[in-house]
Length: 279
Image: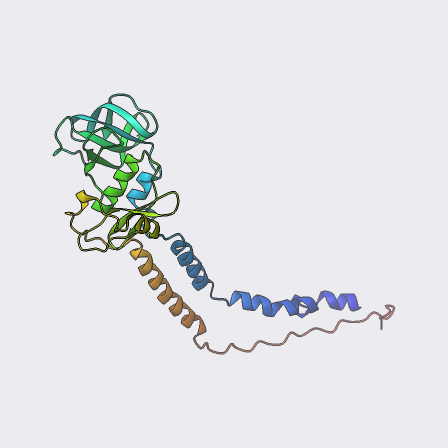
């Protein structure tokens, strides 16, 4: 009789399950959306550095293209250019003459100019990746970048990367100054805007007794009206914080009382005269 009665008892009334119900309700009532938003903001803001990690300079100096090539401009067409005497500075090897498809062909640069191009190999074509730059020569160790899609400070850093044959690829941007980070951790100033304080490391000051001069070619450069690196992450974090507060207040708002539910009624089961009942 006891077994028969137990089979008709709802699961909510069976001992261990009743003890688990408060935990289940607590988990279900947690504000999951604000927690997920907080994790998202933290993951986006975690890898932020003084220079935005996803900008064109970082990609140019960290191999986010199939090849960096240098060559002479021998032809310009509507959607492509042709380089002669071309060779690869980094990445895939190229033939001596290559055609590069580009949505912005440099029509103002004269023929026979020395160019550096960031390219990808797509199918049978070479396609511009992170920009095409006008250079003073085709010698990587001594060339100067004269024009290109980068701002002046980024352009100076990219030139240092080319001059060092890829050895110098870490740069720090501080108050308009651009510094290359050497292997020993010291900073070397390679570019500064006018009317900005020069930056030196203790080692460099002790050795020379004078501030490290900036690149002379960069002193006439005008400040760039661009937002500082990482500004969009600040806006994202602020918007997410406001949304989290709104969602928490929405979850904590007073709710109408629940309607009472009828208590379960367990029917009386007939007892057979010949069946023994366990006491």
